[in-house]
Length: 121
Picture: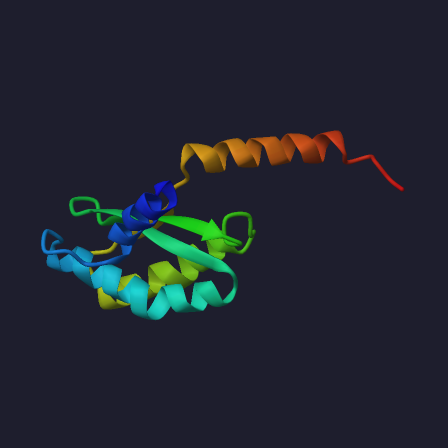
């Protein structure tokens, strides 16, 4: 049951709902139809977090293989940001956000890598 609730909460980030502004609806539509399918082909995903109407900043969360991919920042800035700015002039910047689990995972991985850097067969 918990997995189903998690799925539904994630689904809210993708689907346009009646409370979304026209700008947010356009951002979600572009993410869903043009950006996510391409990212999903590489084993990742992008989740819409929020859009700040005043600053023009879109916050997105990378998932799956995109989380640890060094190219994800380039994809976000040059691919996603450029496309959103082209179709939605209100978008000024796209930033990646991480949740607490992502931060802990990255910290643990970095520590593991440091501790095992000199280990050889």
